[in-house]
Image (cartoon, rainbow over all chains, first blue to last red; front, side):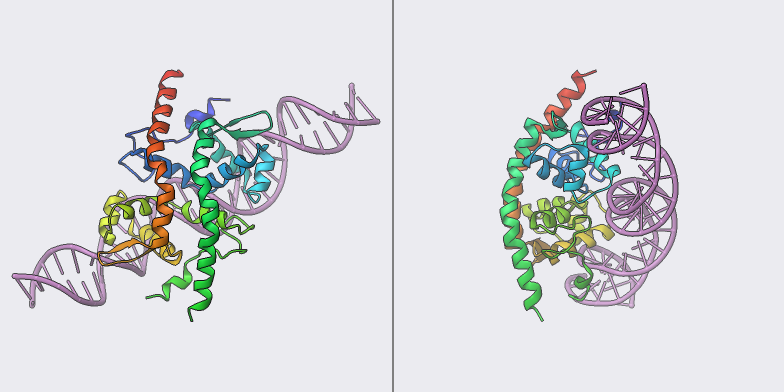
Length: 122
Length: 122
DNA sequence: CGTCGTGCTATTGTTTTAGTAGCAAACTAA
DNA sequence: TTAGTTTGCTACTAAAACAATAGCACGACG
């Protein structure tokens, strides 16, 4: 079961990340989070633990291929783990979420601003 | 010059995002930031304004195709704008960066933990 | 005039993601 | 026991995103 995880590409410090060759921690993190649905999965799991299919439903029916890939990556990154009821965030995952949390409120004002801009200009 | 921006796909509130059909602001944001180098560009611009090529160099020589696409998206999202010296963050972009900033410190501990884990668990 | 740096497009090939189907294992109830 | 569900996940194919490289139009400078 853990053998699969060996194939998951999570960069180590100093190693090349997909695009980034500097290997700075922040870039490794951005590389991981900058994959489709990575942050969405963390966001949804923060609300409550989910089974594979629940998570899939919450993430707008994303394909199981991608969900499984993301889960492997996030588990390899020690942000997500198998829990009682499906999957859940690890302690580190919760810490990360706490830092992302403010984005939730901010995003409302941000999208409002975009809407106003788009409708007012010309 | 602004005509190009019309083709940039940034979801409006309530609209479908690439994968997400819920159209929640936070998912729109995650969709935008969850594209390659989006957060890396914001991170680099927070340090100082950069010309197109400087930014390219800082972002590990990412292809101009992608850089230009990201810049269009981020400008459409009102997070990045043309500044005196190349490109820079908007006021909103700076706010966003302030929220991402804690990730920088945290990521060091996080990658350390991963390294220890990987080397200790056979 | 040449030549330099800038922002950017075009082209081609590779990688990622989407979309769908379906299977093996665990559980449920008859 | 056996049939039906649910769960986690793999296989396959097509579409989209991205990488890599070349190079062009423009303005500044000599």
